[in-house]
Image (spheres, helix red, strand yellow):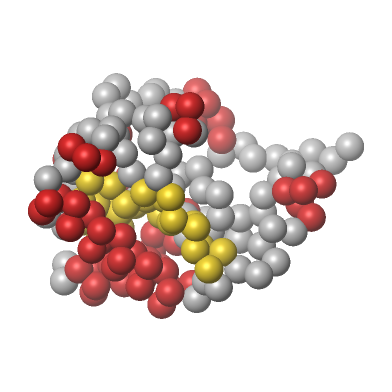
Length: 163
């Protein structure tokens, strides 16, 4: 049997959990690098997923706290989807993915980890990224640290969003 060490996970396991909704708390703070926020618009923001399925896994999130897409007004919906489109453009420039998974899990039974605040997931994909590691070893290989991904993507979002 082989052991895969991930000691940085202990900070998450033992660390104090935020009280309240992180999708409401994080954009109110001015700690974008720490909170992995890459860009903001009037009604939405985009951030790296701290527990990604693949490198460059983003979440696009409305600022309005709700779990029902139908509760967003037209301006909020348009802003959210424009940021989703901008995020696709940025990922294309930064990582040249061969495909993308884009989805939203509405409700805990649908797989939402944070079910009280809706959000899109963008997962860049490349041919061969589903290799033997997850299939045989139940292990995912992440080739870039989150801090490095933030440093690489943030200037592109600043440019795209005029920030």
